Length: 143
Image 1 (cartoon, rainbow, N blue to C red):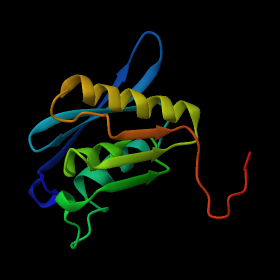
Image 2: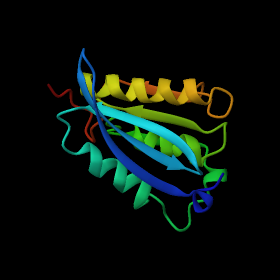
Image 3: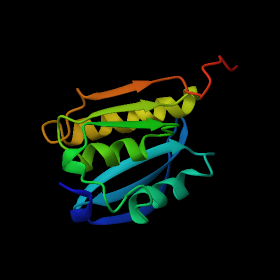
Image 4: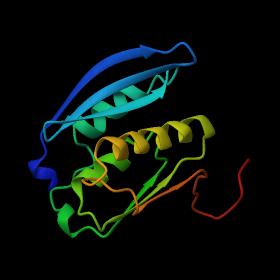
């Protein structure tokens, strides 16, 4: 499905487990509920989901998602844009996600596995490559 055809809606809910606290946001894309989770202290998480899903800030008027072969999500955070790219593009599109923060990376993996569990045949993850490191312009190692 192309990005122009996607219907978006976001609902907010906070969930506290007995083990760890996390927050979640349910996004409806094409009337399909997709849950995103993040660390409970991640203050930017609600804005990121709203920005990517509701406001569609990464959509460009000339982007034909059905023709996209490769997507790179650098600074993937918890994977909201990664999931968006998976849903918007064709099944053969390769999506690379880079997130250097270990806790945030764990939520990225959790969100991708949740998507896979909910929709194993619709959104297979065999073309999604996730990396627990960041990228920079000059190739220096940063600590």
